[in-house]
Amino acid sequence: MTKQDAYEKIGKLDAQRIIRIHDVSTKYGKTHSQGVRDQATLEMIANTISRMVKKQEKPERIAARISELITKHHPFWDGNHRTAFEVAQFIMTMFDFKIEVDESEATQFMRDIDSKNLSGQVIENWIKGKIKSRS
Image 1: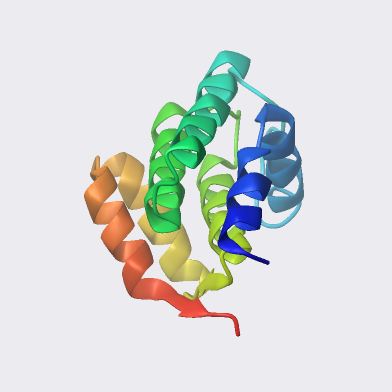
Image 2: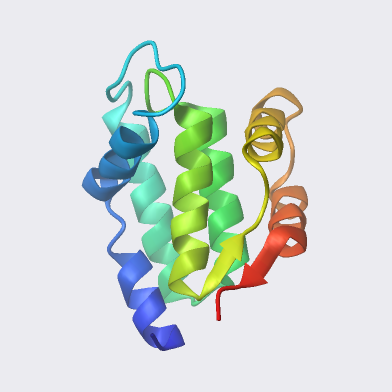
């Protein structure tokens, strides 16, 4: 997949596709309540992706921003941290990278975004330090 193809693919990450990623990611682990808590927040997140794609921002920056928005704004009743990580992973996968961490580290970092109010730059740096080429 070319870089342009990757941008086009993640540019299609609308609210419904994010919900599908959430639905899959919440099938694993403890989930108390599936479902959307705030549709408007999901639309805002999808619009942010679209704007960042149009500017062709770095994939790790897009993944970081979307992780930050999902974990801090909690658009779902449960599973926001898992969903944030899986959406970031999806974005990086489109560019032929993988965020290589074990589940406990990913879980803790996604929780820290929220509980420690980590900045987008800190999140982006974490992603940069964890990505590996899939080729």
